[in-house]
Image (cartoon, rainbow, N blue to C red):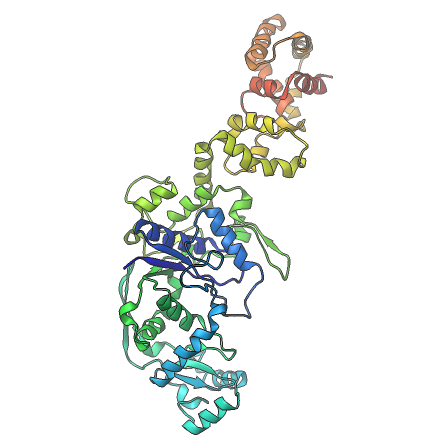
Length: 505
């Protein structure tokens, strides 16, 4: 049987890096096994649907290079791939479950449910659930005569369909990561399968769609484990147990301190992104920054995510996507959660910047220079000279501006005190006379500039260490940057002399 996996997000907002990791593990498993990777949008909860979120998810996957074989955008043999467009399919299966005694109509109103939670609240049960203990006390097809049920349905009385969870049964699941897992059915409430608007809930839709789309392996976060017994029973009750996919519940991505699941709030608090790309909430216009806009390369982002919960069994940490496909195995995914380390994430990005060719880096860095100087206000050819000079100091793409801004515009001198502190007449005379030599110099390259610099030193009783730092601060504005004579060559003769003169007068 051909391997078929799926990522089934809800279009409700930004794509968390945990979601992208689920995509990645699905993608790697499919590619490693010659299978298909399916993107299926689970948009059945219309109350939580957010306009633009579906396109955002697809854009994120495109940026990461994790392109599905089948999707709403691409189509495929099991279309449609939006659950809202498959609405007509689910009611028949809900009716099949009712007919077999594994589900029932529930006519309880919102007020009825609120009253139930209030009336049956106890110290040892502060949040009563609609379960095998409660359903016999509620308004449903298990407590009403058949003719009354038929009348309510025929009259259009709103209802939901709930699964009838058995009491005191052990539900077993074999997980590819966690092995055999057992659940006590008595601890699981009667989940809603079909809502009053005719839309299925996740529980029914995921089983029906996985069956109809011939999904062979289902990878999802471990937070879905409590729902697993419902899904296992649905596969059994619908007569499809032999077709049930193999499950793998992936470990959580944890906060940096390991205390709980990483959330957007943690990112806001600690100053790092948790979304793949910028997400702007339509209702509030609030923008949450993503890894892409912060300056991560997609290859680095994907490599970092692969290592959050999986290891290759070797010391190697840098893997191309093709190498990950070759090395990936679901058996090497950890059971325990993986702490997110933003410094490690930046380390991955730095490694990829060093491995990327200069021409590509110039294209990637260009938007960040445009952001500072404005489009068309600087020469692209200059950036191609700057990139190889500063790339070893760059961790994120905006660093090409931070580490090389002085190539594009005359910098503010922030370390002038370091010049003035030990300034004297000898240094003043050195730079005054050297400017005259530079002005007359027909050849302008770093070797010639340095040679004239060195030749002028003894004439003023100076050593190189006396004036090299002042010269750097004149050009750069601070005590950093690549070789100072190379900087002078790149910015040109006129700009070099201008920057010296503004300090010495």
